[in-house]
Structures are given as C-alpha cells and as structure tokens.
Length: 209
Image 1 (cartoon, rainbow, N blue to C red):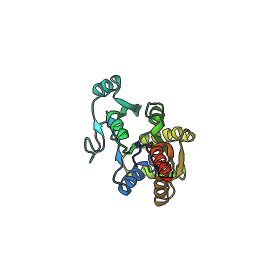
Image 2: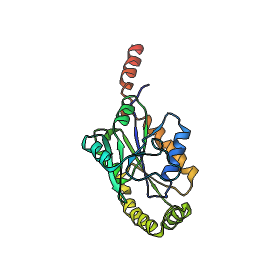
Image 3: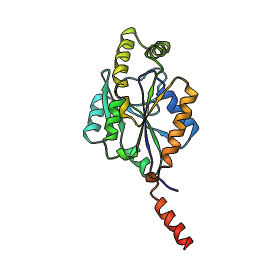
Image 4: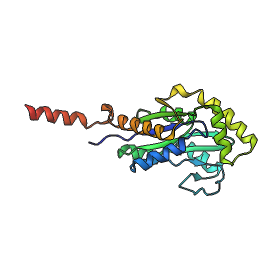
C-alpha cells in the first residue's frame, strides 16, 4: 500500500554515534537513501565527492541558498553545510525515505519547511560527556583546540534534545539500532502516512455490503 516518504532526522553531538547508526539503518533496509550534504569544507582523507559530501566553494553554495535550492543550511566551525532540496522532494513524492544527519539547527529548518509533516526526528545522546570526549580523542583527527570546541558545541546541541520526537541514549550500539528500527517501522505504519488506506477500507466495506 503506497505511502508518502519520510524525512528521518538523526541528530547528536559529534561522537555520539549518529553516522554509524545511520549506516546501520541503511544496511538493515536497502530502500533507505542518505541525504548527501553540500559543504564548503575541504575533503578529509578518504572522502569522496558526491558520496560523503558534495564539496563546493562558498560562492556556489550561497548561490544555491539564494535560489531556494537548500532544504536547510548552517555555518559550523567556519564552513557551510546544507541539504539540497530537489532530491528529497522527489523521494517524498515517490514514497521513499531519506535519512538526514544534521544538527539541531538543520532539524529546525527542515521541520519548519513545507516538508515538515513528513519529518521523524530522533536525537542521540551519549551515555556521558566523559565518554563523548573519549570517543572524540580516539578518532585521532582533531587538535586539542578543536576537541574543546566540539565539546562546547556538544553541550549546546544537547540543550535542544526536547525539540525531537524521539530521544535515545547510545550506551549500546546494537540496542540503539534496534530502537531505531522499531521507530521507523511504527512511523511507516501510521494511518496519516498512508493516504490510500481510506480507499482500501471503503472497498472492504463495499465488499461486506
């Protein structure tokens, strides 16, 4: 039974596990697509343009925003990030679900957009700030100054937890993935997300008569 597509927002402080959980969710359900963000920051080692991000310069990014081509956008640590709108609008119309790995600012913008009714928002909390800092250090990618900045930003992001539909504490990756699967399954089955259901019920009643 056809339904409209979902915009699944997964947010968390850096290091809390949202990217890993999003990948696991897509491994579980191959029909899910990931919204590839555009960014003005340079690629990190191993990142591929069009797969991890759409890498672009500031002028091109701002031109897309001015033309209404971004569903959400924000500046983080001096770089611009945003979600191109056209692929998402197509997915919604075709009944396909799209995962967004965005911060609270991006989440607010998407919920406030015309596609807001299709949003399912999930916030991932770390088990503690100490564990969050340990994970950031374990990456071995950032300087002490960057880590300190990320920890400060994490406190700000966590303060927006109550804006989300669901909040999960990622103290066990497998258990958190199972919770995400349950959320997605339930949201897909909601009556208001299946516009063809009314016609199906009417047919049932006519058959019964």
